[in-house]
Amino acid sequence: MDVKVWIEQVEAALESNQGAFLQVLDKLAPPGGGEVALVRCRLRAAQGDLPGAAAAFPELAAIEEDAALHRPWALAAVDLALAGAIPNHWGLGRALSGLAERAMDRRAPADALDILERHVRAAMARGARQVALRGVDLARAVVDPPDPDAPRLSRRRRRAAEQAIDALHVQAQALPTPAPEDPSALLADLGDDPERDLDRLAATWAAHPTRADLLHAAAHSWQALDDDAAGTDLFAGAVATHPQDVELATAFGWHLVRRRDLITLDAWVTQRFLPDPDPAVQARGHWLLARARLDRGATGAARASVERLLALQPDSLPGRHLRAQVARAEGDRAGALDQLIALAGDPAAPPAISWECLELGTLLGRWAEVREAAGRLGLPVQPGEGPIDEDWGPCRVLRPWADDPPVAATRTGPVTARLEGDEHGGEVVLLRAEALDGGGEGGPLLRALERLGRG
Image 1 (cartoon, rainbow, N blue to C red):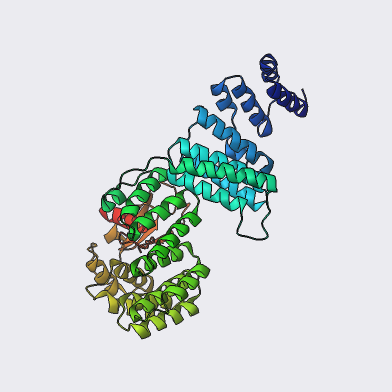
Image 2 (cartoon, one colour):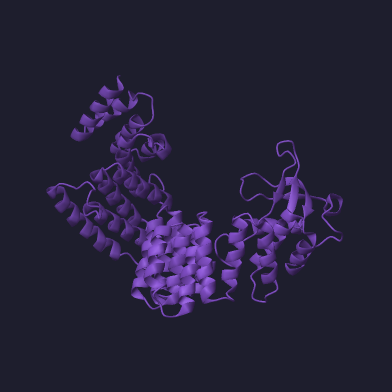
């Protein structure tokens, strides 16, 4: 039977609930994925064959390139999830919110609204309160978009949508909330379910509204759900509620730095930090701008911000550290190393400064500085003027930037190793170890170096 004819027959049989004919059509189903698979899924679900419907249900990747199938896939997915035929978990929620966003990108608000409505229902069924409320907010933005050029719903559809959204909001608000926890214990116990983490963080943050670390953790959870904007909205709401809290304002700025949202950061620093009469607060704003500009490769603008910071606080350790990093980004490695060495002796200097001394000293062959930095960090140091392969010996290098297992190598220094094997061509790896996430524990490359040292 022709595919188009078969689909038409199935649609007619589903509409008239012809059970016997559905069985016949199921046996006559043509091969194929995409639309055929979705129709076969609905056909089997209508017969009460949920395992068969789940088996026929296509993966998102199979229909992703066909925008016309996004809405039917979402509707079928939620129907099956609510019936228990497929798992109803946070991965499904992430897929649904992504499809709704793509529907808005292609200016199809009706599709986006239908997908979000199902997304909220699925989230409520698994008790994900924050995600359900976020879905309601996104649906409201579809009905009343902030962009004046965005496509609009018809008046009748808009009125019906508003009523449905109001009802969903009431249901989502009624979902149970977990009890507040000790913030430090909670942060140490976050798991593999970002939706559950969000609900726990929201309850705890409500009891500790100025704890920026809770907000950073929530932003990470939203990021895992592919919704960075939700984390930004969360921070914006917090600083609006506590406008005098400088630490919270700084945390919001650092969040924008990590998101590389220089436009919003520039506006935020201009609004919150630079008008403040306290020079220390102004200096924080210049540090945030310098960091963001350096991350974007705008070294000239970054240097200008650093110099403004140091004019306000000449002895600022973060400012002097950032000036060294700007010098390195501009290609002045020797000058950057000299600045870092001057900072490394400060008792308040973070380990990141010594790691950078190790790096630059190795790149420049300044082995005395390498040994001094290694000693400050408690790394084993071989005697002699330079690294000797035979003294360091074989090792295995875990490369966190790749999914491969550890690679055989010969360690050539505290922060270098030469990879073995023809596929690597004797490449020398320089193990960088700065705290990439802005925290105090160091980044994944630091953990690799620690593992190499233990080996």
